[in-house]
Image 1 (cartoon, helix red, strand yellow):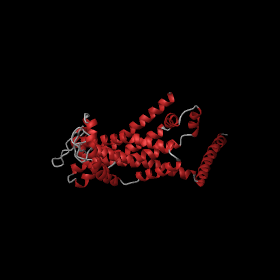
Image 2 (cartoon, rainbow, N blue to C red):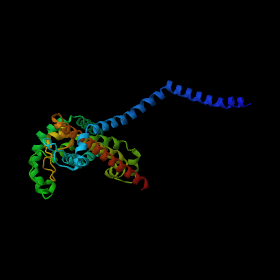
Image 3 (cartoon, rainbow, N blue to C red):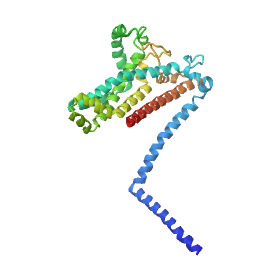
Image 4 (cartoon, rainbow, N blue to C red):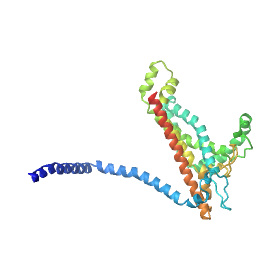
Length: 329
């Protein structure tokens, strides 16, 4: 009797295992399991690559970390001859130029996206969008040349008028020599505007027509519909385009290197020359003769990675807060 009971109870278990195995084989033959495994491997590869990147930056910056500790982040001295290194001028330059570039780019980019998506005739919108997408693909060194041969002469000619109006502000005080935080920010703004315009336009076009028709039925004007119905509906996508542009600005190298002046100093005036993390790594990595010098540059890369992660995390929290506010509201 006991043997029969064991046999009877074990049969469903074996049948269940065989059924699961058969189902898995059927999914494998149909391709479902293969696609699942491939996509899972792709998702894990992102985590693996990120972890390896951080691990290598951490390992190969150990000499600088041990020599300077946390003071590396807040020291302004950068003296390779005497082995004194501090990241603060580069962190400051990276954040200032990126934030100022966004301040310039957001109104222009968002206004252009609204015009192309809601107000412009479709043929004109498609033609201009094609040109904007081409601008997004232009190499950064070309933007650097535009900054040298076009933006610096233009800003040099316009700066007396700017200082006449805004010279009372500390950020516009001092002498303008051409290469500066301000010039780098303007060039960065020109570079990131196509990202904001292209993505925001697609998001605005994805807003359901019912959103527009409902407000039009209430007697709203075209601008009221755009500003009160379309833009709030697409807010999450617009914010995503802005933070993508910010990530692009934080990591830009060549264009900034050509117009910022490459001086490791901190200045409250935007008209003074400065430096960024990406620029100093690109300029000095091949010239790093000592191990401490090399490890200091690699630690700058680690700092840039951390700054990018922190800013993107804050951006994500901001988007979640906005979403929670919309739900509760």
